[in-house]
Image (cartoon, rainbow, N blue to C red; front, side, top):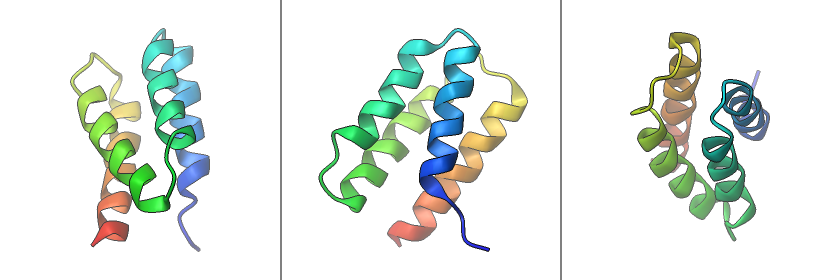
Length: 77
């Protein structure tokens, strides 16, 4: 089974918004919308997701972000 990056990004965005971090959710959404290529989108997502981890998020959401970052890193290498 392959990893569905865009589904996971969307679910993280929704979870951020649900937890009162709509600005961070929008940042993730913009990372995808504003990218021209897959590589550009992944680089922006990785950068923003790493910064988002500095916020006071619940452990489940932090773990999902970590997994997504790992899959992005694997795809970029």
